[in-house]
Length: 478
Image (cartoon, rainbow, N blue to C red; front, side, top):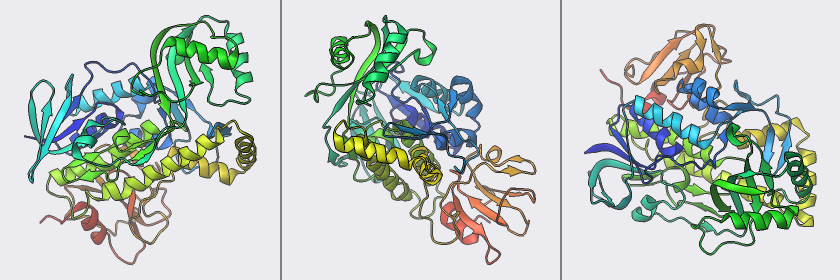
């Protein structure tokens, strides 16, 4: 029996596998596809995801594979200068292709001892009090203590587990794909600029992933396809390009073609006994703002250490359930902001007027910071109780006398960062590091961080961290 089976070897599933291995969990990842996908729907990491990679010592690998960008807002086609007041030591996003992200996370999961099996399609599951039995299309059966579906918007795991997926169906559809274009790049650029005056769901990005002459084409479809599982044809792209731009740009030799709509759906619950959901299996929404891939890996970052603690028998009551409690509202908020963005991307006079007003508002630093913080997820705050304003927020990468905070978080352990030396994590030393550093750039005497970097206790001189340690890390030893 395995500890955990993860279904889906996309960014979410691979991130989760790595996090589980840091917690000492035996994990196997099952992926339906025999080879990694060439599609690159997710085009980069937002600030919070960049921070997470730094927290686990992976950022240098991602920086080598991507390119930094600094565009504030990124909301409904409206951009602005990067806000100076965003609370992060990593004030940028990272443009990196989804295949590169998957390659790096796959390598990390394997380094840590995870097993990744490709060409394994899950077709059935059965649960009992002790575990989950998984049936594969080739007749193989596997058993694990827990099963996590990271298998996309049409999740097989979600369906087999009987978890509802309510929401709204697509009302508009957009075609997306990478293909060569033989038209003069200057002509393409001019056509795109003209069309985007009225249609922001249109674009042609040149030299995708460094390939000269390869374009990422985005163009509104003619209605919503009856069979949305069927990819569009190159002829559909040509027809829609001619409709909007008067030319098909000479597109040819597609690498991949896809379609997406504005459907928004969210799983009724992220946990059903020993079955859990993460990433697109738990929520789907339009890709406006580039939040989908990021939301998924952030789900995994929240879930991994909690599930590892549960498997290891050291989780306090309710810890695993806090995954749903914390992440479901975050997912719902992303669904809402993408609904708002789709409205802003409309072509009617109301949408045009609203976009003009919103563009004026984005000129205010506070508005720009709020919107950028929302899209990049640095403003996510979990409900861990009332008190200091830091509670529930992730801690930025502050400087210490001995380096940087994130250099101390590579092992996915709790951390008591103490400027005074007056506090203690005795009894939790097997789960929590106690670091005394008088030079730490903190405005408070001490903080207790969960393995995901969120603050769950702030030392104010009135009491020690024992209650918070027990709540988040279980009973002390010894």
